[in-house]
Image 1 (cartoon, helix red, strand yellow):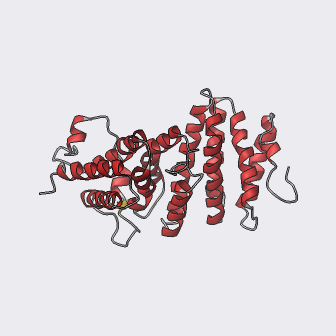
Image 2 (cartoon, one colour):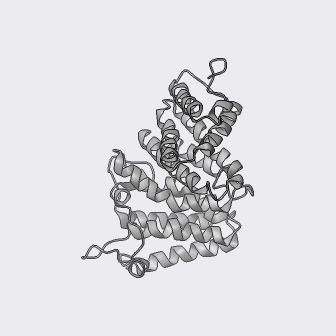
Length: 307
């Protein structure tokens, strides 16, 4: 099921026969887990075309869930970090390219697949001990042309960006809860969203990033009152806001240091300062700059520790 010692051919991955697809995925995992095997970008693109339609063919919920987990776990079975990143680049570029062709009957399973890959990526970065160069290379995969968080690529569907914003911190919290980890460098992790918030050309995208990612994160980091409830105005008026206990217990601003996790209130101020800095950059759109300044000002003013 391989060609010239290479990875499984796309025609096997996209076969109408489930047994053929299952065998191709297992062969793929074995092939990529061997650090001696190399794969070019063109080969990876062809591979991902096959993988995408392999998942397309899965038609029962339990089968879909098992296959999504199996595909995402390949990220971690690969022993070469550059190859893991290449595999992730193929995933995101293929997802962006094929997204508009996914019908409403299949969209939910692709949302699930994205969740699995986001979670697996965080577990990969934890395995790498949040290595700064690895984190930044992954961020570039997300924000460059062809990436799902690229503000200037008109091919990127808005709904894809929204879903990633919705789940990103939640999946980070899950990953931190299942794997021993150095403190997560939040400024680096959310940098793609700060970058997108500054440069997106649509107000709806900016609003989604702020409401789905920035605000819940800041509420989770906010100081708590004596009864254990966050003190911010937003958290008092919205009891449905999620909390991220694993993240708030084990996060820092940038590269992890021997001193360990940082206090949530201090971390929140640093992240707000970073948003202010990006808002001040000349490439930030004027309308977005005003919104980012407003977020910074409101979040500082509502924090009772700022006296």
